Length: 145
Image 1 (tube, rainbow, N blue to C red):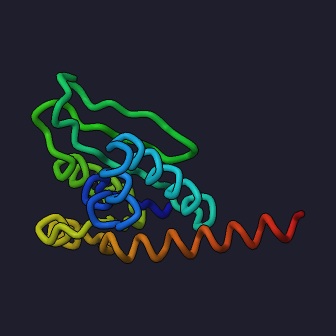
Image 2 (image 1 turned 90 degrees about the horizontal axis):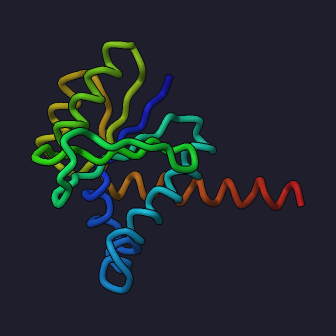
């Protein structure tokens, strides 16, 4: 199985469109837009997509997890970073022989993932893939209209 693990806030702060939402709307709106767009990527690519967000202001004592439009959304528990959750998810995926790709522009995180045998793409490369997937989805919709 192919798995894509996304460093949520790293991507939110790297994509111009999502940064704009941070200043004109809210962090929640930017997160929701990222999840919506990742959903299209997952449908088109067939990858299992997980996005991980830090829960800096949360008092939750355990990770919060839900599936939104086919995207697994993880919020870390209080005192834990998204980096730690991503490392754990990448490790578990590598143990099950899944093909993993992590989307982050964090160099330390990238090095750890590569050390586990995973692939790494930057936040901007992820954006290019999402745009391509959105175009492909539009073509598919037009074909069936």
